Amino acid sequence: MADANDSLSNLVDTEINKTLRPGSAYDAGIDLGTSSRRWRRLYLGKDSGDGIILHDTNSNTLWELDYRGITRSEFEGTATLTPAALDNPDEVSVTLPRNIGSDFVVLVSGARGSVTENSTIYDIYASWTASIFLAASVFTANVIWHVFERTGNVSVGGPWNNLRQLCYEMGGWSLDDIPVGLKRLCWIVRLPL
Image 1: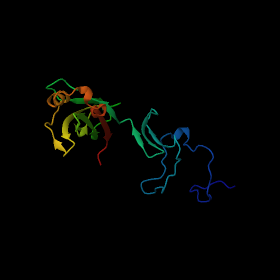
Image 2: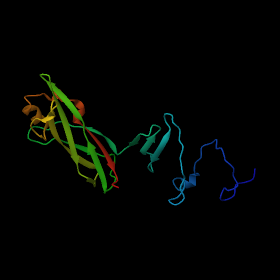
Image 3: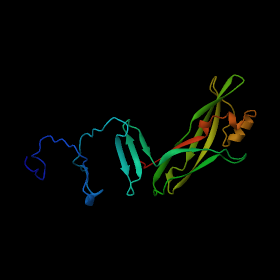
Image 4: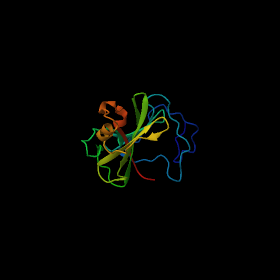
């Protein structure tokens, strides 16, 4: 077999049976394609452990796309609310794994849960908000609570910024009556498009 020329134009379909990697002197220094000369498709395995992993300079995983199409990142997660004392707004402070600079946005969301009292079902919604642009490694998310009677979807007082106050005004509910998932904040940090 002849040696490959610089453009590899004299190769027929080639099967590779070893790991394909840059030389040690070229770690993180070689591109696969360019912005004007792109590859069309990338075919990856479909088994557990297959996917794409992006590492930082210390080999820490920054982002992962697994074989199911699910992404994971060190800049997403959950946090759990510890209800504040009465007359104080409920909030959660989240510290990122490291400072990532400015101009990133943080997106937050919560869940819906329900409490049943005397055969009446009350749906509780947690509406979370946080600073849009993130300029530090810490952000604070605040929550507003809404309660609706499920029959007729009728608002029942509120909104509240304190879960203890909500429980008190709903006739003495206990914090233990509130589903645990309602106290959970989901967050993710992204670059704005």
